[in-house]
Length: 162
Image 1 (cartoon, rainbow, N blue to C red):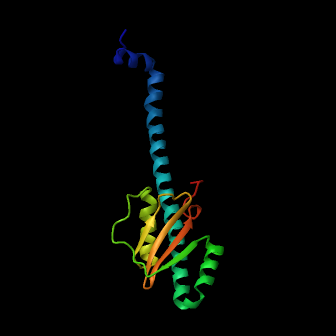
Image 2: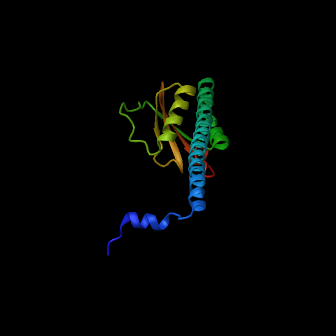
Image 3: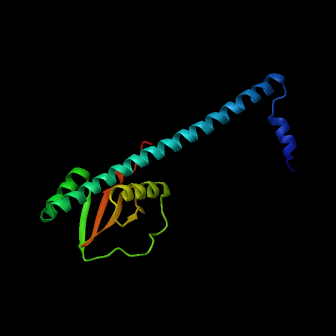
């Protein structure tokens, strides 16, 4: 037995004028509510991600500024960054960042906003590894004497409530 889509639709749709009027009024309202909710949350997630990315980039810029002013206190600066910001920082002397583009972004939204914030605040060559962004984000920054690797906790960049 084949089901005819036209007959199925005819069975589902209301037969009375009240039922049809109700569908004509209610369906655009539901559609508008769905579209408005999607737009609101999309903008909200963008705003939250942009602000969290800017916060991490600012903290990294502050660490770099402290290192520039006090290069002899490198371990103390790294320890303070770990205590205050939750960063795990290591310096690889003499190393140069590879000239290859990073792998395909796992989370394009986070990559886009974090890259923009680091370019704006740090102003040094860098590479991101956001493959495990819920646990940590690894940012390698080229310094004159090597590469500084910053592992920022994912909770600093990802909010589970939004």
